[in-house]
Image (cartoon, rainbow, N blue to C red):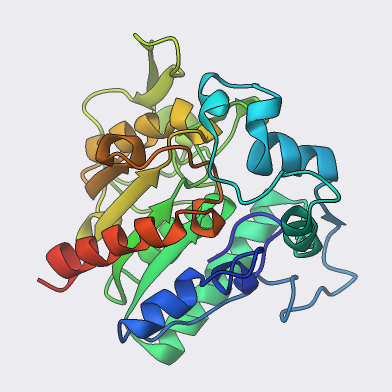
Length: 298
């Protein structure tokens, strides 16, 4: 499940022509479904159904391909794994940017469209492991909440976050259900987030990490999302390195089965938000297979 302005082509060969994750997992015997979000790519837009936008070159450079040149968050300077200069005129950047595509501007509509579509897909193909990236993270939680018996595990690559608010790229309230925009199944149930899902802020003790918002105690549990294992993974140089630990804290508090893979802690350095395309992408992929073998298929 590709992230913002992306398609299933993300998982094919990398922009500089190396083997991508789709081929890697196929070589291990997995069946791989490459999906496009509704209103993108092979799932085209109905003009009457909302409005679309697309990322510009500066945005892509700043947050994805050459963040080390802009240094908008503490870890950005550590980015070293993008193949090429990460700027227009470089063949790899141009190939990557050519894959940028329009996206729905209404978050609620986009979430509903995606959750409904992926639930329908699972109803058709059966049990699956979801690999989500970025914007698609909350869609995976929505699918898992509606079809916990079908979702056997989720690998969440820097899912949209942190809980309850935006940071870095945008700021302000977001995801009123914590890690999702649309309702999730809590126990006790939540019908009014304003009164039934009270939160508290935890101040960071590190200069390179953001503050977190979590539930007040006693915390409600996400009882459907707790039915399958999750691998939450973050890279060393992404803007997510500032706050994905907040997403982890929220998930643990909500009773989810979550493992946390910080690539820097396993001596994989220099990656940013599109690690599955970067120079060491096939150094990372075996870690995901190892987790699947140990946790999901055990």
